[in-house]
Amino acid sequence: KNGVEIVIDMIDIKQNASFYDLTISAPEPLFARDFATVVIEELDAHQREYNKTKTSETRMFIEERIADTRLELEAAEETLKDFTDRNRRIENSPALQLERQRLAREVAVLTGVFTTLKQQLVTTKIEEVKDSQYVVVLDYPEAPLSPSKPNKKMMVVLASIIGLGLGTLIGFLKEYAENSD
Image: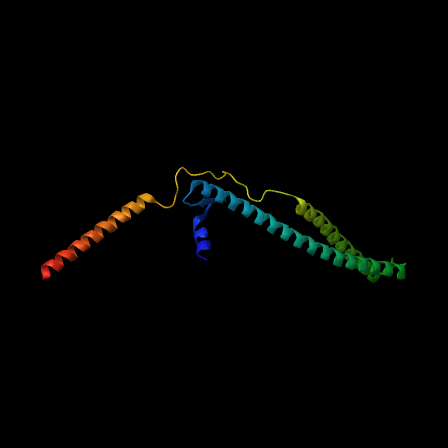
């Protein structure tokens, strides 16, 4: 767990407008560069897999809807055919003409839905096989000139302050012990 926390603490991602800045803080400059490269590659692979999964789910949903719509369309066409076979002479009957128009409209709507689903299926299949770059790298990782961690200057300053503080405290305690006898 500690190792995972240390690695997570090394990674810093900040949003900069519509872009993200990835910063890796590591004691070795070459390690920081290589680690940033690996993080970018893994992010791209993850995004590629995620989009592939989503596209596959979408394709399966569209295929199911096409099958359902095909059945509905065939049933509606059959109903219209049966109506037309039973009612050859509908010129003088407004009710029969209205019923025929309603059945024809339902067939037209289902045909439109079926056509749209077929187009979306083709588009989804194209998207599924398309190999595009999901993570676009503007500036590839470079090894920094100096390590970002540990901050040696800060360590020297803190050690000096703590040393002076402890030295002063020990001096006061020693002086106090000598004077209290």
